[in-house]
Length: 265
Image (cartoon, rainbow, N blue to C red; front, side, top):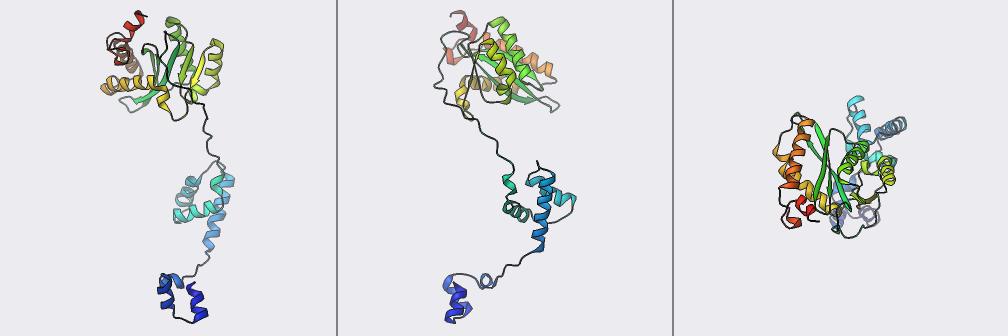
């Protein structure tokens, strides 16, 4: 508009810029095509063709740290997007689950068990996980399995160990973790005629009983000890679980330990 006013009406550049609220530098700016942009585009196309799983981060680091180019990451990313290379990698599909309904309290033991994972680390800094199982009826902790890795095979084995002394549940409530979605667990549950109740993704309140149990375990067990090994963590987990079930009053069931409610059932 400023250039049109100058060319058509013959006003000064200063007046035109003042009228339209732009600087004279902006008025006189002329975009210059850079041959480097074509070079960047060529490199990006070559890299993403050769390394189909590389995203922008790896491509930029390769150009900067391996090839020694000093191009600004914003410039490279702009060209990366203009080439639509950011659309190559499909985003992970989010699992859709129907609302499972209100979280009811079972009327008897072994109707619904809840299960979930927790994470912590040893004194050496190595991370480990725990697999927690509880009975929703009396909030009893049925087992805590500790391990560096807890794949679906370990999950099935831990559940079978609990079933040996406790009996088989009608249903298992869990989130959408890969261990619970694995075909190993699904096939085992079908063979045992146990229903898997999956909560909606991102809705931990739909598994509130085990989440509350996890908070207590974190506060009264994990945060109070330094674990020297997996066996040490498993020993302390077993000791704490016995105290939780037999001696610790649980406010959710009337201020009595879970085992006492079970005996009165």
